[in-house]
Image 1 (cartoon, rainbow, N blue to C red):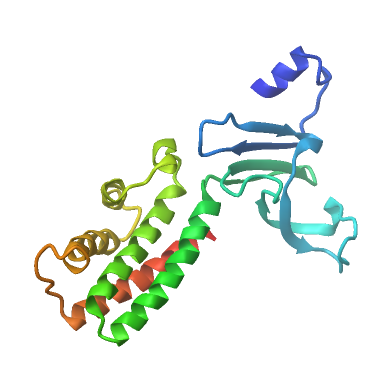
Image 2 (cartoon, rainbow, N blue to C red):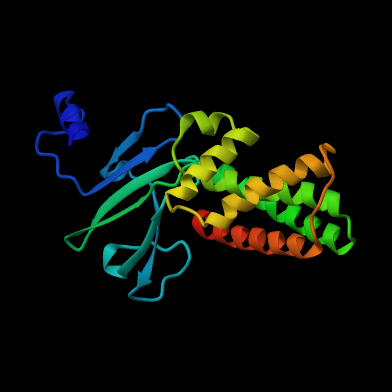
Length: 228
């Protein structure tokens, strides 16, 4: 309503303006949110059709029996969140996705998948020190990917080993993620100091290695679920 009133005052909208579609696109940095009204709204709608529809064919609201999802198009940044609403057959359909930085998070997820494959090979070859180092990188990538979807301009701009551990542990205590994910991140961080930087002797059994590997594999599946 503030946007509509502002535009009516500026005479860019008529005084009898009727709202049929609305969209707010929000960014993870300091950029101001975009407000779109009616024909300005851009979105990809997935739904159930009432008839066979050929690719490229014009679709009207009578051709849709149910809307399943509303997503931003590729014209908007992959890291943006949104709220979108439109009237279908006299009723408002509303959907929002307040996950930010999904583009960056997906890149980290893809990289984590590669690191996890490498960790498995290293464990199979009994290369324990490189395994610990690579598995730590995997779990840190996954933790960062999860944290980035929550709006925090400071963390979005810069992530460090310490800030990720502190922030992730805090979010876990609030019930956002499984406690064993944060425990594994913190434990592997300490083991990595021994494995890579030789800060003391590395003591870890093959059983513990496999336990941590299973936790990270579960963490990757969970990350895929909340990002994609």
